[in-house]
Length: 368
Image 1: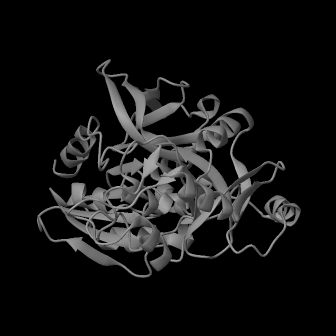
Image 2: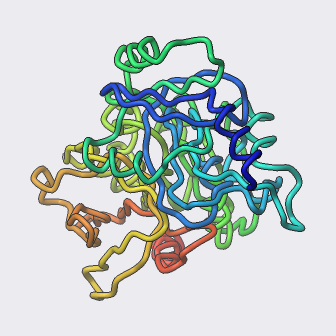
């Protein structure tokens, strides 16, 4: 970028991200020209931004990408994780034009087409360090130049936030559907709390997958005569998804269960544990997790702000995986019933795939 372009970019710094604690980060608007409220989190992944922005688990959040350059391979219709974009907005340092044969449009155009605002030319390193020090922040993203910074800070403070909020009901499918008829002899019902497409693809490798809305009753699920029930990932506060907790309690012991992320938290809650909010969550594809059964360390993909409180873990559950960064619970297994779950994402796309074996464990349970 030459001097004139840099000067123009500075003149275009018409957008800002106002945090509830009064800190303001300025930048240049891109994507949809729509102001938004949300919670700021940072993601440390070096690639996979399209999978990130299409992950329903980011509903209600501004995602700050720590990679220095974003957008170089554009966006396409194949690398999506859901039917739409649910995040509140995207925060990047340097937004680059696409240069890839698979690109169908730029990231700027992709966000605009899906009604998601973005802000670029932000000091994401400073923002990340601020969140690490002070925790996740409620925020207001102003890209319309319609508010003063003081007004935006006040709106951020007044926003209800994500604690105690059921966002699974906002991102779930409206009615049941069959994702794949790959194996008619094995049938899995997947609760859609914000399920990612690559989770469904992983399950479809060995079963017919029927996806149902988050509030589907346990009785209706059992009437489908599934060989197993899968509890998907999803956004916001697990303790607020009370109907899912009750349904899981009714399913325990009647059918094998596997959970990922929010599904892991819900299974733990159904067994009597409690969840807690992490200071700044785990978001990225480079988190080390130890498998306690094998002693092996897996590099994992993660996206969550809540975790199971180890002090409340009931006797019926045993810890199967732990996070090596902060010691939080990354997996549990029921001691007596065919049910297990992990906090991380074994289906991880674009990677890593260290934990993909977990789907084979579920396959063994449902095909016995």
